[in-house]
Image (tube, rainbow, N blue to C red; front, side, top):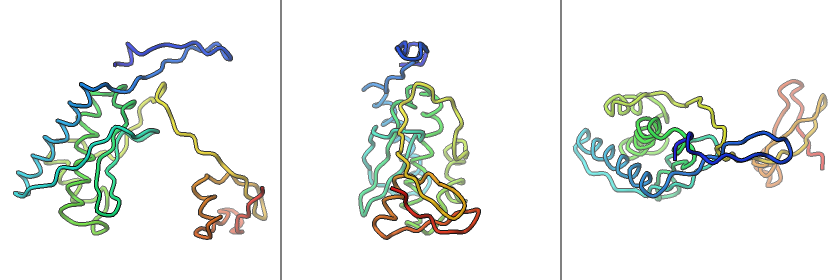
Length: 190
């Protein structure tokens, strides 16, 4: 559904009209999966080798339009169906080759051996005829956003809001954070 056809809601508290973006449907998901397959096939022609077909999921939320993910031996591509709905053509031409290029570079060069948006990735994006831009700065009004809770920490000079991710690292003893102003260690203030 395009943003022009998106449902409109009136917020009872503020009286502000909100446009709610609906995620892409089954037909557009198939088109995205087909475009993903097309770029994998192009890579096979370029590298003269076969690449395994990996799972394509439409479960990404937040500000990222796409993500190539590796966990152990499992690899998959995740797309954000709300951002695709708002900017379908842009994501089909930019995000799909971007994520496929991450997958192919991972398969050809291995994990941790090249920079994520390094020379190899840039070269492949060029071969795909796609923009080598790393991020986009588009209006995401109406796209559901993740909101991470923050936790109060103190140092010698001020109070800091620390994300739940960093807070959990501190609790598990796997992280320690310093103030960028006074260089003092941040201490949790429950």
